Image (cartoon, rainbow, N blue to C red; front, side, top):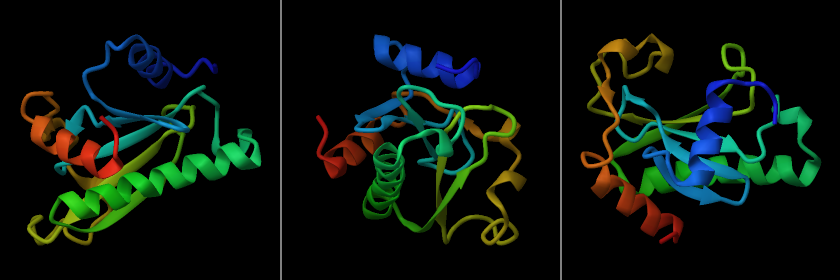
Length: 147
């Protein structure tokens, strides 16, 4: 693993069964809910093992990570009222591969509907709580065909 901080800690916690934000174990890593739900259903895909960037993966592992990322987006489209999915891979602040999977909704405030997701005030976002998101998590797991 890289010395990436939060991504490493989240993957270690997911492996140990101690990360409440875990949605599912996918072939390339862990699907987890974002700690701050600035839009309902915001997910991250964390690779396991952790690598510094997408280009650090061999071709097959890279393809699997990207396929899993799209699979999460497909599931969100099918179980929420999302009209599109935004995908982002940066690694600038947290220097480890992780993908943001962000559902976008027609009922978002008008000024936000077409804005970059990072303009949301994350400090004011709803914190993730497993109980509050249990129904969405169950629906997504069914869609992903994961028990």
